[in-house]
Length: 455
Image (cartoon, rainbow, N blue to C red; front, side, top):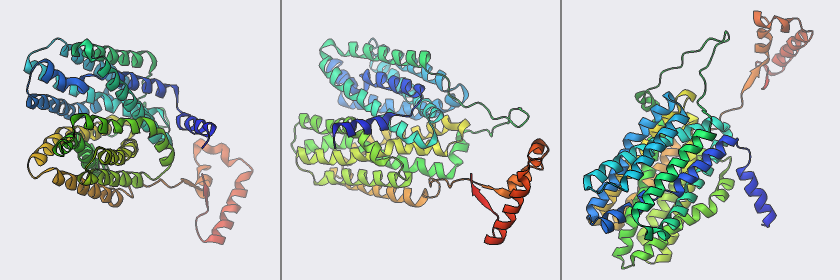
């Protein structure tokens, strides 16, 4: 493949999106580039403040617990307030929490701030996902989510490298930089992003049509979407397990902590380097096939961890489940947008985000308990089993719900009948009307069916 063809492929991958999408993409990149809090929080608590590893783990878990509440909250606000005000408010709230961490030193004060930060950071995601679905045509939504996910990981990679290099400035300085970056993200949204929430529908007389009220309970009663959420929860449990189980497994085999740092860095390198290529290869593919494939890759990658015995082998397993991650995240977000009514996109994205947050809270605790108890091999067999179950579930339970919609057709007899309506009297006077009638009768005799043409 030549350089020119690579350029054309990259141009095709990123072309065709409105300006507002790219401002939102830039805000995601800026936000993640300054995301130092979670990256260095455990080190700050143990090395700088002298707290135990147990307490550091508890605080990180509280961040995930805050996300469980923040995601549905953000979904409701996204639909009621709008996408833009929800983003601005939650970005500023997260920035305030990051700044507070630079000054709060008491143990439970830090825990409370991190909990609130988890609420704010997770609450902003439904508004971002809903805004993307609002701005981008339905057939391009998955590609848009993939590009936004690429920006998120690119920013995170920059933050990890830059934060490590700038750690000599002190952890508190990094937290202040995080607050500034998040504030800048809110400023970009305020200055450059328009509100994208769809306006209410109107009838033929121009009067507003009352939309069906959608509560969180209504969302959970949506059977196909409920299935999508539960299957995503299974995948999230598999995806989250390596972040706790992998370093413990490698340490149990006598590998140094630095080896884990190199192995897990493969995840970010693969995403940043190959996300656009994966987008190109998976574009226009069936969402059910992609979700099933990604689940199997998660199962294969995590399951093979039980067989790995060297840093190279562990890195290979990370590559496998990282490819699954690159396929799953944008496809799942696009499937959520597809199943959600326009006026309830925020709530649907909020419930889906809650599945990620629940997994982020449950999986670390469960993975640690399994490694300490039955052992790491049991953990990896369990993740492989869960991944296979999720793949089968996607293929069996969601094949119809996420199938490509058939092309709409218009019946010629309906067009003829339309001419008889008062508001279409001018059509009745057209000379072509007898010709349409004859054509309809002729086609009806030839086929024995109602004549129709593609719209």
